[in-house]
Image 1 (spheres, one colour):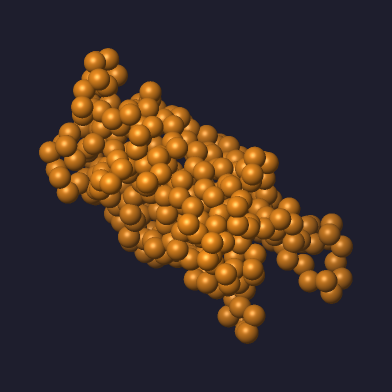
Image 2: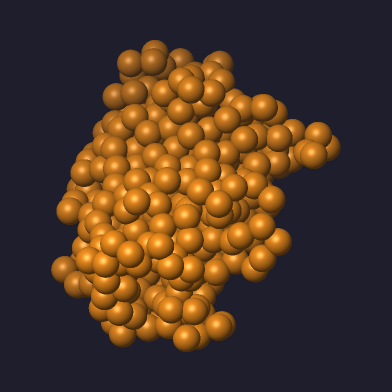
Length: 340
């Protein structure tokens, strides 16, 4: 079993994760700076506790988590007891098992402009500059009309932040999309923009892999996008490593999103480039669907995907993704049929 390969590099006094020791079941962990982890099942006397269960009782649980983290900080000997384990000996899993995954599309202005240019037909009479200007006008109109675009993902596509990602043999153009994710704290239905952030427990990282070749249906273009096929293969959503409480992130609208491929920086952009912020997305989703505790709201990905660079994923590639204050994930791509 692989070690976590994670560090306690996050904002605030604690974060939540799901970890396991070799040959043992995963457990919900309270992670504190310094790289120590507390098994919350034992600490709270609840053997069946999960991180989703924590979010279902967030108002009750959050103060208790703060107390546990504060006690560990105040008592230097606490980290020397058997209750606290060193992070380096544990494997990190996806930090929550959501019931629903909501994904925001076309939410970063520059990213969409780059994709439009990359997907241009060879017969397109427009120059690159004309194509950019036209899609920029479309994005500005969308922002003015205040209409986000959200679709549904599958929880079965989620994998751990350090697990290998198997690239299916049918995926001709697998691409990366690092994203900021909001994790819900309580049911939300028809909430306003002004109150929406009160329903967010915290934030984490997702890499929303996409096969560009199957985004649009080839048999009938009028059907539109095929999100099932292009985004929901097993392992196409590495998640985590940590969920950092919302109060520890000063401004989710001003975080740096960075992805490196084999050590080379491909994405490096601020969440300031989002057309619609987290509050607007949560409110918009809640106008149609009931968000549940532990659900994920992926907020879209900034410029710098593989289509822009003309370099798609292949077996052996290593992706390293980080977002300010939320830690970092590292995943290796494996071509289907070659996984060991």
